[in-house]
Length: 210
Image 1: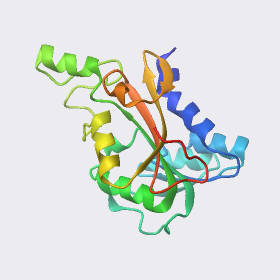
Image 2 (image 1 turned 45 degrees about the vertical axis):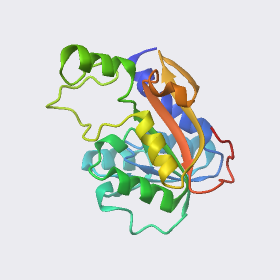
Image 3 (image 1 turned 90 degrees about the vertical axis):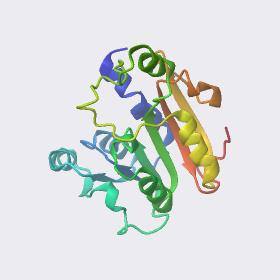
Image 4 (image 1 turned 180 degrees about the vertical axis):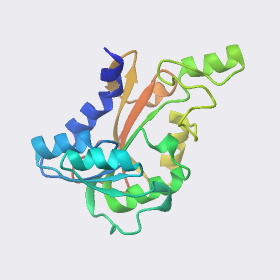
């Protein structure tokens, strides 16, 4: 598996999760590649939210509708439950107000899909303990002074938030040693990256409980 393929594993998982004809909001959509593919192949009605002007331009070039918005300001212009799915792909750790972003995601979406690097992975923890320095791993290849990750959290942190905030965990996936497995709570130490589908209540697109 190449580094690019490894980075895109959650694209494939999200693509498989989203049903034909769904409405999708992608928070931090980047260049809009995922929404464009969903629109072409699954007739998804997609809208991207992106802060970076150059990424907005790329998203537009893919034929995807996009709003240039800073997620830390919220999504006040979007009505409650106006999208079937809201995607938050490797974005939560780079925003200033992660709890606001999560709440807004579940407000405007019937279901949310979040993926994130697991800072509780054993390799990250071992690196910190052995070196006494912020970890640099294949999954987190940044020095402390140039990392985009400003809020570090683990799988257990997210599971605590889910339990404490009336959130339903519909299903999940874990990336471990280059392979994707169904998520289980025991993966909190072994998963390099994690993807979870969550909602405030039972979604019409899924009812599985982990």
